[in-house]
Length: 112
Length: 487
Image (cartoon, one colour):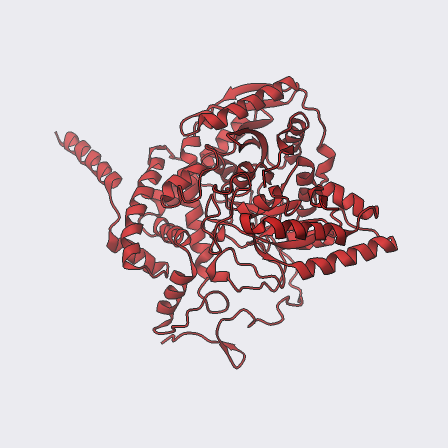
């Protein structure tokens, strides 16, 4: 009986994960973490779209990946070293692309 | 004089080096062509006329003096606007970088210059290369030269359209999930995504750095091979660039595929792939057989998970790569500086980025966040391993794999743009080559209702010669690459 209940719970748990929906609040929170302002309309639109996209992503749940290592990169990356030699910087005017500057400095918004 | 713009890159450089043609005269013909049709196509974001003219005059001077000229002497190249060009603005088709002028050249640009190529301008694209249609560009959509109502494919849509509308003989694109091959297919161009690590990414504005490569677009396989020979090779400035001896890819162009073993994966002809694109590709398989190749069906069972895994990985990498844009040192900065730095940055990023870029950054942040990291990101990376194993296994028995490049014909501008997921589905046949790092090329293989169909040929890592040879043999025995749009 106990094992039967556990099975049901597991099945329900799985189902809950599958049908889990992202809320507007969550989307707002994640957008804040990503430093992107959203308009009210976008909050609603993105939430609806994210739920559809994430539902499609959940397809990958079907695959058994036990004991499969992740592939971060397709070539065997190892650290590449070079001599620490001084080279001329290609950047002659670092402020050239700065939208706001003052007295030869980047002008930052208020930090504190 | 008037039809000089029709010459291929190979012809142009030969004629200029032999002083049969002046580089300036040729370039003027290109500018006339651009003047005539660019308003209809909108392939370019920036055209650098004065600089290009200075360069061709220098080339003509060198030719007259009998000085040695490079293999791309006087050949104009249209460069995708996510590849940094010193002194020429590089926008990524984004408001964020509308006024960004790079202080340095990408390695591929240095290589082009060293071969005496002429930078013609910067081509339109989906914003930050995120898209399949070139509709997400801040500067407006590019139009398909075969039907101006339709999309040219993306994200390197401007590069493919410029080449096929004969505004430039060749172009550079970048391919993260099909962004060279898709527009090549939709515009009837030849477009190659090299093996990951073959071409330096130094100076390519990163979107998903473990997936993307810069590659050539051209009107024929020879020009594609010529451009690849120039841009490939090891670069100290890109730690993912592989140290292999440089190759001349023109050497492999032989009209001989006797004994070549070709695989047709069932999944490339399965659900979601329209009949219209299957037929020309199956005819191409017959053609290969006529030419002495053998074919066999095979299965890549993990393919059905490739698209989801691809988007999880690409969005994750995008959220990290695009975190640098805050409008402080460069990029869009709103006049309204009210609030603390994070409020200001968030505002700059809302206005500076278009909807699709914001969508991918936020979703990428979500799948990387605590609690979802294992469920999405780590899971996708493990599936990437399985897909790679699937490919390795398949390539034990075949030399190349063929299939359609795109699952459907070019569609109308505006038709799919409001449904992100529907748009992502278009990449279903191109993303496997990016996940595995394998090289792949798209070549014209037919038309349906006047719209082009592309044949995709995938090869083993660093065996670009094999896919180029197969593409070349196909091209030599078909006429599709000779058709031009009714412009």
